[in-house]
Length: 382
Image (cartoon, rainbow, N blue to C red):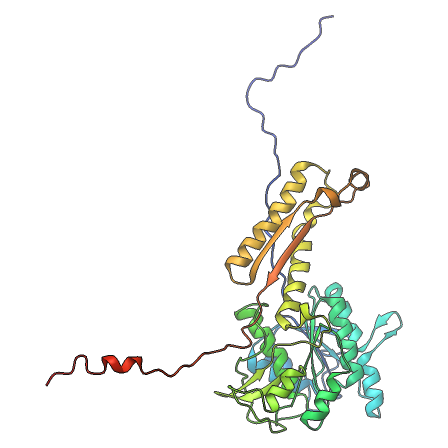
């Protein structure tokens, strides 16, 4: 019996899915808010449960009048209308009990208090990146928020506890976390108002400018006064604002309205002294990881490696062009990828980057001279 040979007559197309993929930037402007409100609507704000707020004004009608929930939402909404993950924490019979409730833990297999923010991405589909507990952020709470900032790759804003500049500076020494900024003093409105407005303003800056811009020197909506006096001089650091910034603590100054003044975290690592450096590192970490997830479990090949490197570098070029990075580069290092490691399915891609530091100090050299007197008569007719 003769062998039948299949003859292909025409055109066949093989689909080859290689090349650069676009990397989507993370949503860095989602607020994680911890608050109390005994008379808040229980269905809208069940205790110890992360809830999603996409319309702050509507949520205000359900927030009640007591505790910190309503006034925090009001202060945030003065700056922007962001996405908020809110956790209403039950008030204790004593301030210490309330603090314990805010720090939270695990009960019945569910997170409570601040730790409930860890469930937001799984339950609500968003990850809170801007963290705060206005009016409730004593030292234990601030320490917990700094830890959550590390876990969520977010950033916490807390009050520097103290009745004066000296005690606020002393309090600053209790922390060494890069995911935390301390702010002093409060506004004259209510306890925690400055922190609530910092959360809202941070979300507004992320939305309008980007995560590479610090909180500093941006006008705060809705502030009419401060809880403590702060002496500030733009041309000198020998004053209250200068002492606080040197601590470093962010303060609030009155200059064309009220504005936060200070760029620095509580980090003990100089590389992450600036708020913008920390948030840039976090944004790159998450966006790049998500952006190359498509490559996981694909067969290792030169083409795959090239596609991953090119995908990251395309994103870096875009971020640099937009002014979010000074520069960045990704590469494949053969020394970091020995054959045995590649055979085990492990691929290493290196990249470095330079974040945009804030122009924190601008030096102007002023000189007096008589050289312009030589032309004083030019153009004057008799």
